Image (cartoon, rainbow, N blue to C red; front, side, top):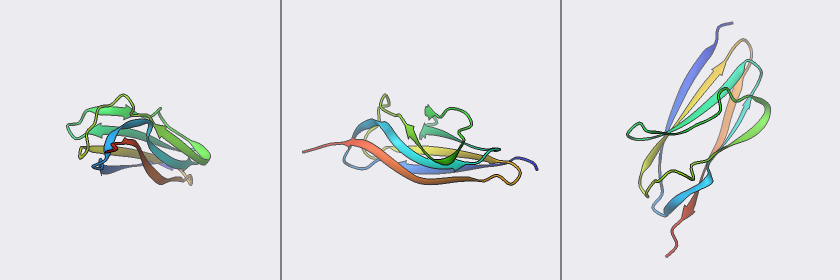
Length: 108
């Protein structure tokens, strides 16, 4: 009956053809029953917060969160860190699936 919370940290190295972020820098699919939620934060490696999701995302159907990083300056080879904070209580469940990197590419 107590709330169970888990943090998942993912390090993502930006590809060599990275030019800039799109308005959906990351797409994250999630499904959270009542009494469950997910929060997403994106950091640069120096700890600078570049995105925080609205608090306590919940939806009983599969939902895609678009993480808008378009105002963030990043370079090819930079590393960003995604923090997924999952919280659930009672018999509720939360699921996270498909994390898709969305960016503009350098063209030669």
